[in-house]
Image 1 (cartoon, helix red, strand yellow):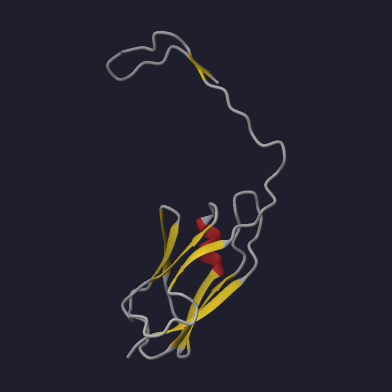
Image 2 (cartoon, rainbow, N blue to C red):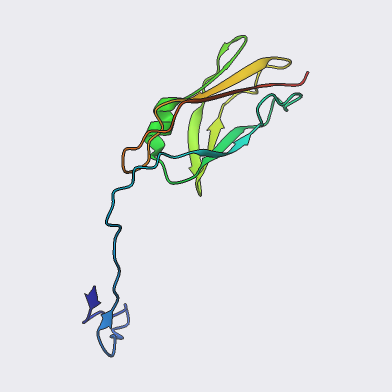
Length: 130
């Protein structure tokens, strides 16, 4: 990559062309993402009803695959939420608190990286406090 005739807003130009080299991988990415962080932990008890569920993957994934592939339910039924991504951390934002003293289950299906590799389905449960 060679850059020349580049100037900032005040008209200051590069004194000489800037040359940068880079190489890509010669083999395609065939590694699916992995879940590397989850909150709450599997089988956690007394999880606060006002806390948010969060998780992170081993590599970048499309937020649309998380929006379509994440589900949260309690023993009282499905829990509605929006997915928010912040610096690789995905947070399930519900407008209401989680049901108290209830078993909740998170399921992630069809999560894909930019190369189209799909993570194996993951499911874990936790219980909220009173």
